[in-house]
Image (cartoon, rainbow, N blue to C red; front, top):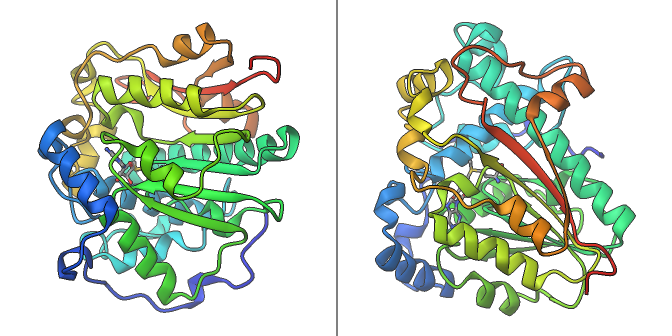
Length: 341
Ligand SMILES: C[S@@+](CC[C@H](N)C(=O)[O-])C[C@H]1O[C@@H](n2cnc3c(N)ncnc32)[C@H](O)[C@@H]1O
């Protein structure tokens, strides 16, 4: 993993206005997202298109965790852009971006354990995407629900890679504004695709230059539990359909039958009380499809791991505890064999 050529943490930060509301022309992504909002009940996800609230605010939560991880002496992943997102958004400008700024430091369920979870996830998926492009030869990467992911800017990609970043327009517009103010340059070609994943995102992705005949590395990090069952089913079967042999996919799921079982867990409670983010309200409560089994049945080679497996591997990260909101979290890694098509 390489550091970007300059250290973005040297640059000053100030809160930005979310820009989507100030524009009069509407992008294709916005029009499609509007259709999705009408047809799929976006208000259930908070009804906010940018990072000011609803599910978009969770992108800032992950960014804050990455900022804290970056500055840990035993850091698992480095993201020098993360703190700039946090400090630039009015909704999060007062959040900690260093562990010592959190009142309880490492003992905080939110800024200690939960942030470390995101740091570990970032590292594991950094390793996954780089290993997949290097070993498998894929040169296009699709980040589904990319949020404030800066992998296009901070990883050591082969020169001819294209990174497609799919998220809703307001989130990508905020990201564009913050990175633009930092004059951040991607390491390789980066193509933001503003579309709602509950709408026809395939049309938007292919219009942006995605090639279904070439192998792809797909990532759905911290995304699927926000989507309705039908949208997840469509997403997984579409990834399968658009994946040439040699493609790879990683995603995160939650196995709990009843998410409310952990409503009083330290993680959910502190996230709600300290940040006003009610994750259980944002998650889809519908029964989940078995996406790993779907891929296995379609000829993919899949492995399902707990985050704690990687805590042991890296020697740091969260461990199981009582009343643990992470108990059902699984990270799924899937490869489409070269002979499958
Ligand atoms: C928890 S954040 C994770 C972001 C990023 N993958 C990361 O790990 O940093 C969830 C992201 O999913 C995006 N998202 C949720 N539902 C979406 C939808 N229906 N269409 C597009 N993006 C969506 C949100 O806007 C948000 O950026």
